[in-house]
Length: 172
Image (cartoon, rainbow, N blue to C red):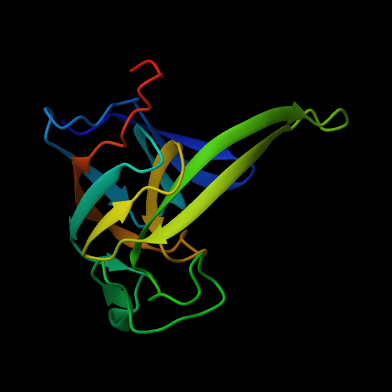
């Protein structure tokens, strides 16, 4: 099932939001589309620290509309810049992040909502299994900060390989 997406703009950064879903071993896989022109796409998946998720991606994106040299797959272009979240990984590669909300404040002057979050960003590329670093919401994106002129999308299949072990004294 592909989650329904709603486009939201939060503090001038475009983010695609999705319905909340739980990835369970019985459920198998979730297919998700990651548009190249959104800074981050909210998968709707709440994950736990220690979950092991396998990501397999396909598709092509253009990192600059009209530039025939700017097309790449989920591994990205063999180039690194300061205009990307992971500066030591390929530009345009598929990446992920887990966001845990710490608190929400409202600026008294502007009335703007300020979200204090703990964020971990990690490389995915075309295929990768990731030991999720912290509990929170899973987002997928393109390893580039200037996304407004991008085209295309990656299609990502996510499979839960292992759920974090529960503490015997904790509730499921």
